[in-house]
Length: 456
Image (cartoon, rainbow, N blue to C red; front, side, top):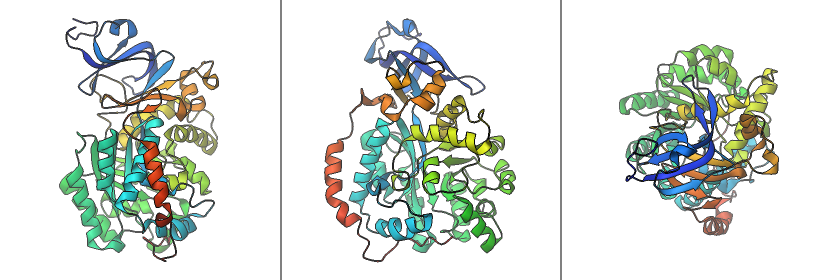
């Protein structure tokens, strides 16, 4: 028998050794095991042990990771991956102009090929930044699912719809979710994806809730994105966006709410007693760019038992898919908003980036921690650079000193997607070349069409 209890003639698929490993205890608090090793068999973590114990374990692949920290793969809980093609196109604009004058006119030009190229570029960016799973909410999602299968990432995908599309929009969202859930060897999970309460009617929201319950599907939606939306909703309907979700039955489904910076105190009791698994995804960089006056009320949501995961939103508003930056900004903005330097601590930020984010996308029993039985989604972060030395507090170094570029290796389901900064499943140069050739047609706005009207 080997040191970790496996027969010596049964090689592990992967052994990562010599690193510090982020671990969670029974109370879901994080800590670190020094000079540790991770043994992977059949896409699953078989053991987290000492480097000494794993020294003689035979392995198909062995990664010596001295000077590095192994973390659960980061999770981007809300994005629009193909929108990397619009990065930098709509700058320094208020929300309404951003949608109506640039983004929604341009999105009428989207073809499946544009989405495929954007998704490939986005996946490359996320792999290089240590993201192993992303929740996407966009158009042509069969194409995105194909890219996920190709590049090896994990994804939670929903085909967005607006009521302005008529019944076919909702039907297409359901058909996609049923057709592609469990795809890519189980790495793809799916959701129904109504756009938002201000673009989807109450009748369609209620129908979506019924479909979610009937088919065992979660729902991913924008809601209470900012305070203006909440105030307009109160003026027009006498209800907040969260109260509309409650009235239409969506709070009784497994629901992922994007942003929530317009959540009010009166919404919290509803969120606390939901009939399903409700979570919120926060993407703080975009809120700063749009100069929104409030941010996601992480502390209040945590007190209400609502998981809050980290996100980037799309690169058209955020300019990057850097969850590492979202983690640091969440900690800093929460300190400023709450007026309390003890909240959000670096350890709390890492908790949101790992365990909380996994729960937010409905995968809390599969990913989000490095422990036996969990899927082998692992990132290795190099802390030998001058900007990460010396290390007095490993959690603080990871959150406030390390950068996405310090990720050396990214592993999903036990498969190495990037090793020593070299991407192994995507050719970025070819993607950028073709995408650049297509940009004039993609960004044309002279046609006067829009996907939707932003009027909240």
